[in-house]
Image 1 (cartoon, helix red, strand yellow):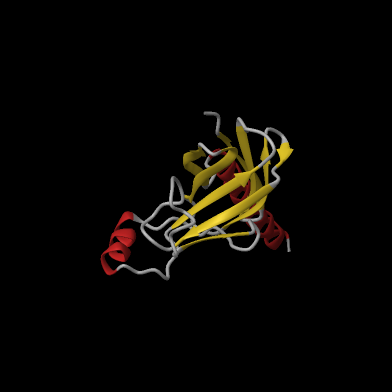
Image 2 (cartoon, one colour):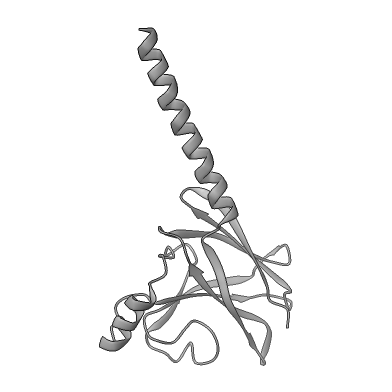
Length: 162
């Protein structure tokens, strides 16, 4: 009986240590990153941020803030073409669509080899790029993206000042 108790104690201690190490790793290596920001000359409140999930499972967006205020309107851009979600022509590309931020999870980024294979066959079914488009009542300096990854809440702050 004492031996079984020791084994259970060792197993539970190992599991707790692994969970703690995993949480610490995820806090210091967040999966979501911003790869670029686009500005619009005709609307100084509008920003488009190309976002990438460098993790190994989906990221779910929760909320987007601009300079500590809730953004008036935020859309998640999904790109199934070779056009990244940044710059001009986003609304003209039939393979880029914008949705509510809770409508889709952001899947892990495809490897360079996978992207090259999809570009070669011109596959327009697989999501290749993600972006976040925000509209507000002022020209923001910082966008804060709240998201969950493996059920853990995280944030990504992006400098969007011109």
